[in-house]
Image 1 (spheres, one colour):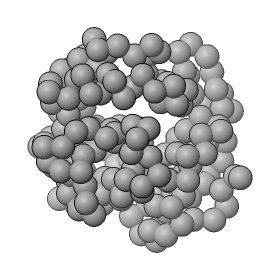
Image 2: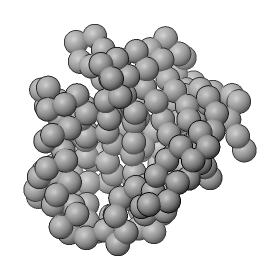
Image 3: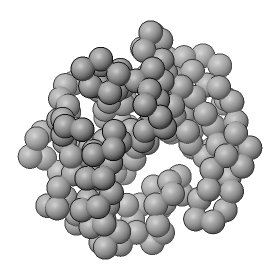
Image 4: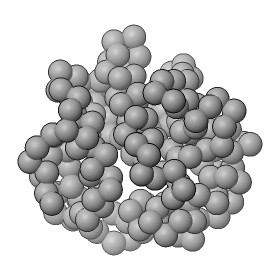
Length: 187
């Protein structure tokens, strides 16, 4: 797959590079990121290096792109967002945001850019983008809800986090779904 930068709404999404390793490592020591993701805890510089040098390139080669979220093309990493291929027409989105960037709508704007790219016929031509989060991750749920993802339910023991099975919320966005806050989400 071709490396593609995305830009709009005051953001630039680029593939993370080796120059981002230290920033990624610093961001991923945030307890909230560890609590709600499957990343290693504690997260180390070597974890960030393996992510940038191995995971990201393999993902781009296999229809599973990952972008660093930035304010400008040369700006610091604010977060990460990616699509993990589930099959040739569906992907699962995942994202995190540094604590100092939260509350500004950054990841909501980034998610819209990524969904636009995923659904484009000249890009991934996806028919479904799925969002999953561990039950209780209300901040992530609010982002998905604002973008228009429809809540589909709870997958009991649907996720594995560092050796422990946890319940997962599941939602999805289809190409023709309106991009407006969806109803029917848990409180």
